[in-house]
Image (tube, rainbow, N blue to C red; front, top):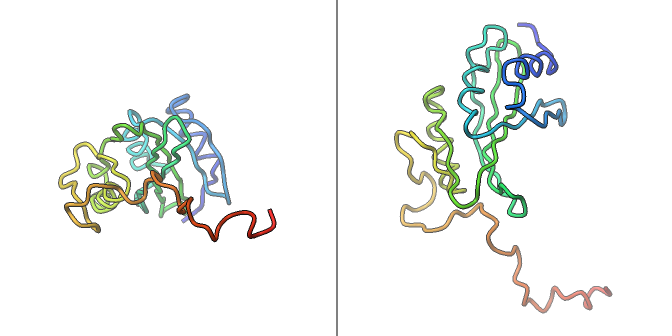
Length: 167
């Protein structure tokens, strides 16, 4: 069970996809890159089925929301090569109007509940998902609680005014 380096993984990915993957970084030694929603299934399939890489374990799928960006909603995939003992994070950013992306349940059955949870909290529609419905919140909920659509604090609170703190 030998570990391959992030550089080898990145070289194989860029050799196969070129400009379709971008912004590679290594925060805390964790290889991270971005792709588009049109390419995500092809990238995940390559990572899983490549004979050298063998990213056979889907660790997590989650969402993020950056309301100030042009593509504010992101889907984050964490995949792990148990054979090579290396992990990769893939980010895909989507439009805030209609966030939708192809399901990964065709590659990993375990993506089912992860995608349901991401839908439940961020409102991301996973196209082709076999049973996309709420998993943790009540069924008749009309909002998605992890979206940053509302201010974190009430701006009318008197005890939070700057003059109380000498500012």
